[in-house]
Image (cartoon, rainbow, N blue to C red; front, side, top):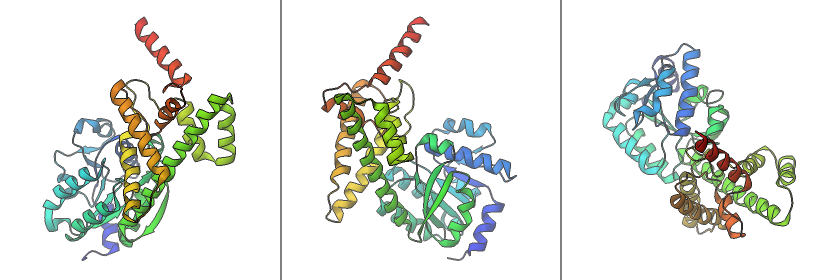
Amino acid sequence: MSATPTDQLTIKTTLPIGWIGLGSMGLAMAMNVQKHLKATGLPNLHYWNRTISKGDSLKGIGGWPCERITEVPWNCGVTFISVSDDQTLEYVVDEVVTLGTSLNGKIFVDTTTVHPSTTTAVANQLEQLGAYYVAAPVFGSTPVAQASQLLVAVAGHEGAVAAVEPLLKGVIARGVIRVGEDPAQALLLKTTSNMLTAGMMYLISEAHTLAEKSGLPSSVLESLIEQNLGTYAHGVSKRLTSGAYLPADGQAPQSSLVLGIKDVQHGVNLAKSTGMKLEVAESYVNAAKKAKAWSAEKGRALDSSSVFGVIRERAGLQFENEVVKERDAKKMKRTDDE
């Protein structure tokens, strides 16, 4: 490649930063990047999304909307990509590579969770045109992203990673894990993390269901989880006991159930390709698919932790716990009063 790490750093500081994809996670991260750019006197963030109105809040703090995908990398030295799945990422990259050799020396930072083989394929497409591809999958839910407290794994050309790191740690993330120069390795780490999180959701759901069936107060179990298993496990537990696993009607989930199924399925498929079976991950996927069917039937958006509802039903309880029932009843009463 013709550009050196020093060239990349110059590009980053002299040209606008770009963003493609404004789902709930993407918008949260893009907002934090724009706030950082504004605070440091750098050019405003250029952005594109299929539904451009989703970026109105970003525009409201100075973000610059673009009409076409290709406008973003054309004008920017560093472009972040944050989309929902493999197919959408492939579409975005297919559009971007139509710019040809004008991409030479530019950096693409991809936060999308995809199969490692997809990462390898799109990295090759961009690198053949002289661009740098940095895989940067993130760990955390939308509220964590809004608080700039994500964890991000990065892999790619060392100079490109060094150039974009100031836009990661302290801006969208609390910490950065460097995985090496092969972008696919970052997605392997993310896939493993998804398996761990899914397993934790499943096991803690079983624990809370057992507690309810046997008369152990959930608050006592949750105290044990917090003090003995740590902050992350406690956060998973709170998503169940607070009712976040089944958001109020019209409220967005912290983490999409559909994307949760997709992410964990990548791990299941990857394991199969190595001759391995991930029994816990498969149990999560099976329960999550039942939750998806419940969602379709009831017309309610569900969080990726909604396997809790399925495990409750298997144990003879209702999908909704008492917190959810009370919350929804209060909302219905307010609606009736109005």
